[in-house]
Image: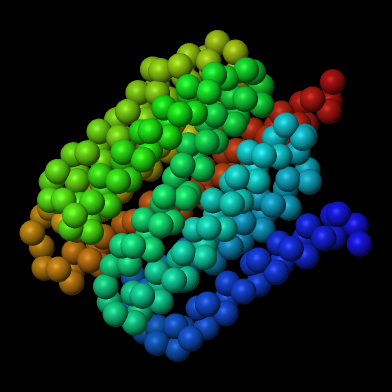
Length: 261
């Protein structure tokens, strides 16, 4: 059996079980449950994105394959968790906080790794860039989870999470990662880097908005829970799928440019 065929049989085995996870839950999905419907729509969009990113790894040059594979892993991990989260929501009407943060603890660091990977594909990047992005990510996630799960007050958790996010923004706008991008990257990589950091700025701003609406406005718990989940779900579409599309764009662009020389 060829390596190529084995690879796609393995991918098919990994993805094929996902619909089975949701089969039982679909029986209980109401037509007026817009939160549950949003979970379903986004989970399928994530599955489709995963297939696309993995297939496109065969199109790009070797140095870009890792970046595109990571994009596929982000959407794959998110898709699996979305089926579980949707099941929790449909069955209980409760926010699936634990599942969402397990998802984020895997996917958000992978998204941050993408900044390092696209720079490493075109120039030498110090390891400190990687670790600073990871530290900021973990501070942001731990603060947010502590506030949402009740291990800390809602406001302290919110503040710690915002500090972690601010640290990430500093690194990609004014820190070493930004300086390397401006000084050593080709135009297409610079453009992708800038788009990615604006997603981290504007797209990620949706999460604290959701946190604020869900935990800090003092609304009715049922209404705030619904709003929180819809906001988080919409944010994940932008911050995971669109982020991967940007990686795909620069990878294919650089590959085609190199082939034309």
